[in-house]
Each structure stands twice: as C-alpha cells, then as structure tokens.
Amino acid sequence: MKKCGRCKKDKDYKEFYKLKSGKNKGLHTSYCKACNLEYRKEYLKIRPWAITYTYIKNRMHDKTSDSYKRYSKRKMSLGMKELKHLWFRDRAYRLKQPSIDRIDNDKDYTLDNCRYIEKVENSRLGGLIGSKRAGVGRPKKGVLK
Image (cartoon, rainbow, N blue to C red; front, side):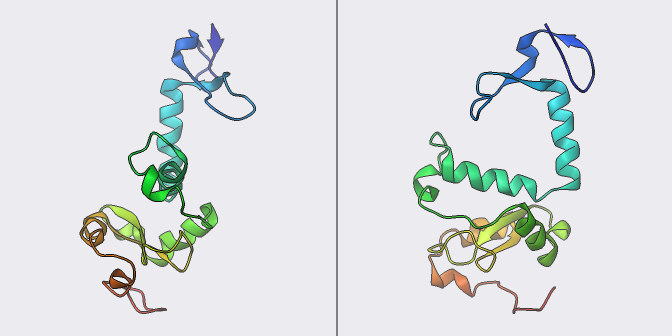
C-alpha cells in the first residue's frame, strides 16, 4: 500500500504509475493515477502550450512512435518559455485546434521556424516540402491577425 500525495488515500501500488526513466526509474509516482490525470488536466488548462512540448519530444525521442524515423534527426531549441511566446504571438488560444508547424520542414524546431496554426491547415500543408511551404499562409513579420 502507498499513500497518494494528493488525495491522501492509501491505495494499492497498481494505482500508481511506475517511472520509466531517470534516476528514480522503477519507483512509483507520488500521486495515484486518478489524481495524476486530474493534476495534468489542471496543468494543461493554464499551460496549453506544454502539450506541444510533450508531442515534439515524443516525436524526436520515443523509438516506438510512428513519427520517430522522420523526426529523430531534428534538433529542438524550443523550451516551454519559447512555446509560450509562440502561443501568444500566434494567438493560438483563438484557434479551435492549435498545432505547431515548422514553416520549413527541412529545418529544425526553432523560434523563427515554428508557428501555431489550425491542425487542419497543418495537415493540408503536410504534403508540401521545405521552401514550397515557407510562404504558404504565413502572416508577414510583425503583423498579427
């Protein structure tokens, strides 16, 4: 039995996630699965750009991801601070389904090469390569919609 750090209830170890990497690999999380989910929802509600960070990292580092082969050689110079900047610069909070887009697919995840656009538009642009997509639907620098 283990006590959840959030709801303070004693629960079976099966009710806790096991850490998969890092110095605490193999140990159980301090919050139970239910509280962990609740906490994550609250966290993402006030930091919606954080999910983008997770998605990018998974594409680049998770060998079981379908996208790994295409993204593993990419570099990322975006942290949470830069993603937050992009979120507000591109007014992603106004989008129905914000999606991170690399303006030039041949380049890495950098502040100058990324923007938030609608997911449906990002899917449409997926067929365009490199510099062909760079000018498509991109607002002029310094001009916000």
